[in-house]
Structures are given as C-alpha cells and as structure tokens.
Amino acid sequence: MFKSVFFSRRPLVSAFPGAMRTLFVVACLSAGAAYADDYADVNRLVRAGQFPEALTKADQYLQGKPRDPQMRFLKGVIQTEAGKPADAIATFTKITEDYPELPEPYNNLAVLYAGQSQFDKARAALEMAIRTNPSYATAHENLGDVYAKLASQAYSKALQLDGANTGVQPKLALIRTLFAPEPKGQKPAAAAPAAPVAAVKPAAPVAATPAGKPAASAAAAPAVKPAAPVPAAPAAPASTPAASTGGEKEVEAAVRAWATAWADKDMAAYLGSYGQNFDPPGKQARKTWEADRRTRIVGKSRISVKLSNLSVAIQGSKATAKFKQDYSADSLNISSRKTLDLAKVGERWVIVRESTGS
Image 1: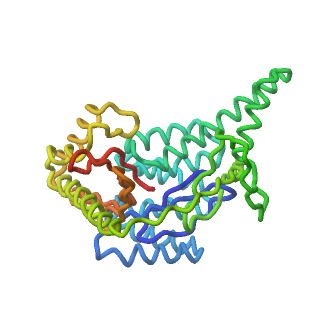
Image 2: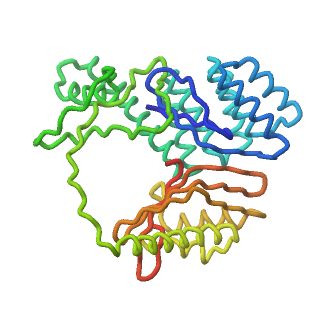
Image 3: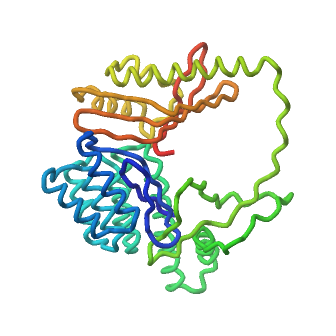
C-alpha cells in the first residue's frame, strides 16, 4: 500500500517487497546537461539490477559533487533496492538535513521505517513531508496507511488484554480486510442491488507501478468493490464540440496565466488565480496559506514554471487540468505531475483545488 518515490529522469522499477505499491515521480534536482549521462548510466544499471555497479558509479560522481541531491537520492534508492535499509535510511536522513524543503526523502524514509514496522517513525517522517508540501498526495495516502497499521496494533493489544471485549474484534477485522491478500485471478462480483459498504475504498491503480510491501507487514490491496453499471451518455448536440473546444482554451489560458504569474512573482495575479472557495492544502486557513506562498515565492531570486502535456476536462461550470510541471527556483529543479480543479465564476476560470503527484 505504501508508495515510495523515485527521483530520476525516467521511472524505474522498485523492488519493495509484497503489496507496498510504489509511485515514481519524475523529478530532477540538479539537472545540468553535463551530468545527464551520469544519471542515465546509474539509472540503466539500476534497471538491470546491477546494484553494486550502480552504487560504485554513484559514489564516483558524488566524490566531485558531494551535495548533489539528485545523485544522493538515487544512491538511497540503490541502497534500498540492494537490501541495505540501514544505509538507505542514513542517506535519506542526511538529505532531509541538507534539503529540508524536499518532501520526497521524508516519504521514502517512511517507507523504510514501515518496512521495519517502526510505524511511529514512519508517521513522523510523513508528517514532515506534508508540512513541507501540504498538497503532496502520496504522503497523505501513506500517512493513512500508517494510521491504519497503528490502529491494527492497538486493537490487537486491546484484544490481548481483554479477550471478552466484543467491540474490538469487528474493528480489527475491518482493518485486516483493508490489508487482506487478494486471491490471484479473482474477479469482481457482479453489482448487486444492495447498497455497497462505503468504509473500504480500494486505491486507484497506478500505471506501470509494481506491487510491493514491507516484509513485516500483512498489507495488501483491499477487496475489490463492484462498480454500478454506468448508463450510456446521450449523444451531444452538434454544437457541443465547438463550445467544448472554446471552454478548454479558456481553461488552458487561465492555467498558463497562473504559471506565468508564479514565475514573474506577481503575487496579485498569482493569488487572484485562486477562487474564494479555494481549499488550501493541509486544512490551512486561507490567510496562512497566502502568507506561506508569499514567503516561498518572493524569497526566490528567480523562478521558472513550465507546463507540458496539458489536458483539460470540462463538466458544466467545473474543469480539471492535468499536466507535467517543470519548476526551477535558484538551484532547485523539480518535475512532477500536477492537477488543478477549476470553477467558472462569471467569465473567469479560477482554481478551487490543487494537488501534486496525481
């Protein structure tokens, strides 16, 4: 269930054991063109499972650039894949000390701690990741899994101390259902008229994402919830495509204006891109979120925000824009997937929610 993150120019296959799913966020933290071949060489060795050779090459690179966060992160991943969790924990911990603004090393620390059943440490690491980036969806999901494992431990202890407590067993059974192994080849049952159980929601599958879980965990994908049949949508009028295209262009223009204002550090235009109903990440108050954004943006000497693979979906007065975002500020360069939910207010499309890594 847990998702680790792999900073690289290309997504690689992780070897976390069991049912711990991994999510690879394409990101680059010191992406000079002169070093692209070094990253590519290390990535190629990791993909081939040649971990000792990959580690040697990473160490050779770091002799000349010991603070390079990209290669240090790759080194931590190599150590994890090679079955050296203690070394990987030391590597990721040092990155968090040198680059506390990056949430991904905290996330991978949590995955390693969870693999050792150190769920309190995993929780603390994920809370730091979320504090660094409140819109980091992967860390929020992992934190939910950690809370579930902690609850399972607490209920098990309660049952040991008081076996006659009939209220504990159903709770423990529900959590075990969340992490119960799913038989291979099992198909979802046909949709039944009865109301489905809403307490268990299976995680959405991630493309090209392998399964895995910590050795000490019994975590696995929850039981598949049958989907209700979806009626066929009525045919759209002939004028709909043109109207939809115009709306999509308006949404795209609003998204690109938001990115431009961000890069120009035009706080009035940037904050004006968000609607009055915008939901700040991490349940922050709007004023607190705005103050935090001002500090993060105005304090940078330069900012570049480039968008690519932008796709827009519109449904009435609501729209969703998904794209790859290449962010650069001073010496930091990060690429990630981003989603903006927008609503039309008058003649303008404004942002009402944003998330990263989805």
